Image (cartoon, rainbow, N blue to C red; front, side, top):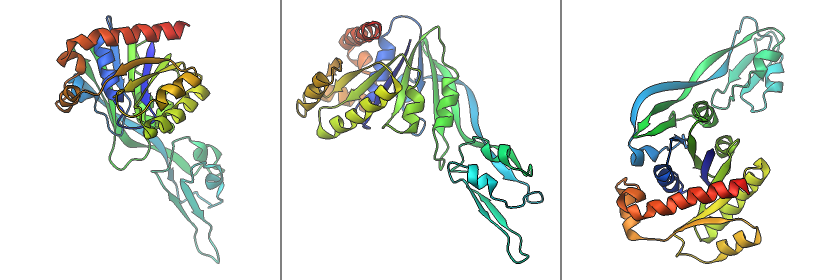
Amino acid sequence: MIISVASGKGGTGKTTIAVNLALSIDGEVQFLDCDAEEPNAHIFLKPEINETQKVFIPVPEIDQGKCTYCGRCREVCAYNAIAVIKGAEGKKGSILVFSNLCHGCGSCSYFCPEGAIKEVNKEVGEIEIGTSGAIQFIHGRLNIGEAMAPPVIRQIKKYINPTRTVIIDAPPGTSCPVVETIKKSDFCLLVTEPTPFGLNDLTLAVEVLRKLKVTFGVVINRSDLGNNKTDEYCENENIPILMRIPFKKEIAVAYSKGEPIVKTFPEYRKDFKQLFNRIKGEKLS
């Protein structure tokens, strides 16, 4: 079973829920941290890394000797990663490739009538593979200055172990990295907080999950703060609230030290086990 843990808003406690859920499940577990722009699950799980792999995407390289500056590559590029300036009055044209915009789709090389474009690998990040006790651990890290996390996320998800319960820590928000992470999950936990900002971004995340047709439920963190608008929204939209975590200074202190809740407060382990059982129940219903 693949369970993604996501949130429309950053800072709601998404990684906290993902980590403690993984530590509370009986049986074999795999943990994937797909927040490639700012992975932090390793702070709590403290894995022993035994393998590192670079992540590449193919980007175009232009053979200026063959290029006629016809502009076909620019026309087929959906991401405006190529600019073509045609020659005039005997002057040679020019072509520019903006590799940070390139998605590595290969359209430019495929459609080039002169065969003037070949693809070369560009490093955009890396993934690290290891173990945290009995938990298989994989996370990715986007290189500084790179704009696109999905290639790193796709590389991480290639290592999904279908024989284990897979917990995926998704990036915050509702953009492409989140969609890439959540799709093909069996269930998604949406972590929110009972504030106007939390509710606003929860509604956006719900829209994404409904379009992806992924079953989901909600966890309300810091549930005794804010207002009851989140409860009203979930009730009106028939969204199950699977767990509530109150605001406690002791939990915040443990978090600041990189200590999981279930290790500092063992009594919470049964609550996360119950959360897992409720997820299985919602998936089957």
